[in-house]
Length: 170
Image 1 (cartoon, rainbow, N blue to C red):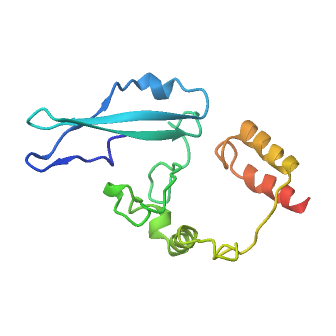
Image 2: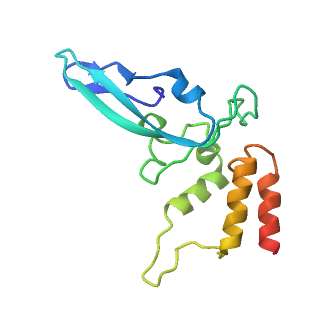
Image 3: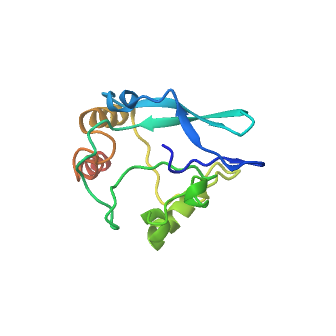
């Protein structure tokens, strides 16, 4: 939680940041998806305290000690990124240099298209290749899939692809 957070004071320079009221159990005790608000705090040499809050979205509570590695040998993990941050340096909330979404041309172009997608006056999106409409029944099937299998392919390597193929065929 601290690797992308920095604090700089005009007089003191870089200041130390702590997570207020942090408890390991807050995260290790989870049994399902949840949004947790954490509070970062820092104090300057004059004892002025600054606090900022951030929301952490937990989508999968399975243990992460084992699992797939990225192409650079680091652990794979899910990262959501907002349009305001995707082109910034990692230290400013952007993507890591080793992220496929930054280092691979196809991924980078796909992300740029998604981030620059805008809805025109005609109501159409700027780069829609194909769109689908899902019925209420389809949506319920997706919810059940996520309940049974986790987000994406988090619990089975190709389950999402098979599931989506089945929905698109029907």
